[in-house]
Image (cartoon, rainbow, N blue to C red; front, side, top):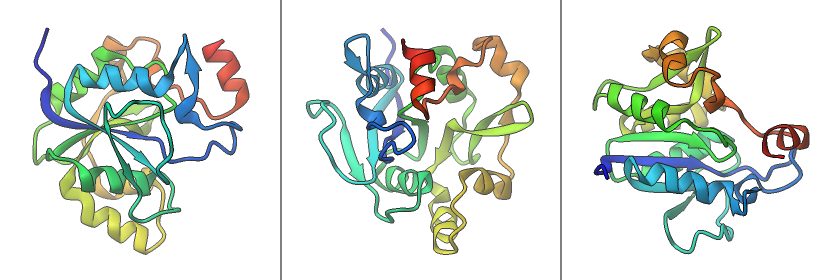
Length: 197
């Protein structure tokens, strides 16, 4: 069994699931919440796991992780990213969203192996689009996030474009996740039916 890395994992679980109709963090899959399964996966690689939420609510994790509430609420995923990075113990953070059921352990390990403290954000480029999650974010970008939020520039994608982050190419990603399943999100009831049923 490998030792977890000195890195923080942040799961963004802040949304109310308006489009989905239920709390994404409590989606059940194979008898356990998707969030609980994700926490278990992340604990294999990361010494610390944080759940960033818009408002603290029961998540059924029995105190297995630290839950942090948005400090700058109602600003979408950027709020959760800010809350998680602010609370993280380690300078580098692996960030995922709570509605990504098929995160590849190989891809997460590859991202972590390629990240270097101080190098900035490391993300994957798929189809010419820089995917904001999963990705590695350093705590050092907190001032940039705060400025973006204060000026109401709330797109994580916009933030990534402005900092010109290094990317892992689609070809490299497909070597460890051939079908790119790690980037599937559950946003609608149709998504849940298609992917979890």
